[in-house]
Image (cartoon, rainbow, N blue to C red; front, side, top):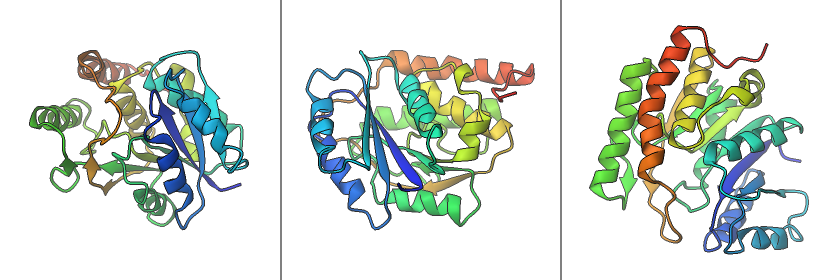
Length: 245
């Protein structure tokens, strides 16, 4: 078993899932993969289960009954990995918007540069986003600026979904009290780690909009992020940080 596992949430990713799995498994460092599939009607889970015959000890899947939210998918994945011996737990999208080669750089940030939480950042060195509409780039960029202002957290890309956690971070956070399911989930996890004094390091990446499949972003998810940040800050001010007792 590898010391590292990549959690990939999926919903209708049949065009991408086999290619992303094979690309990760072809990397020079060994990573295991855990797919969290939310009842994809397009057969995504069936593709993964078929690949398990080829990668029986490295490829895992949790199947859920329906679309229960990105945050709950990752929480389920975190709990699954903490029942095993993984030291480094990654979040990554299935659609190649995150370059699998950058897993190596996130791993290096945690193993060699002292980071507890490494963030694949689109905005650490300018704006490194390819093929997004300008409106979405601006929305995402200014959302991260907004998070920095409200929380004081020195992270340029607080909504990033390409992340490596050292095991101790997920063991320390009370995962059952992480409240947000969508856009704000990524912010809540980083902000909780920040408030618990874990070291966060950003690794500059280039984010490329998906070529295949359909984006899951919508206005409701974005609104959760905008209003959720204020809620997080207020909870922190009144002692509501999610640390295990």
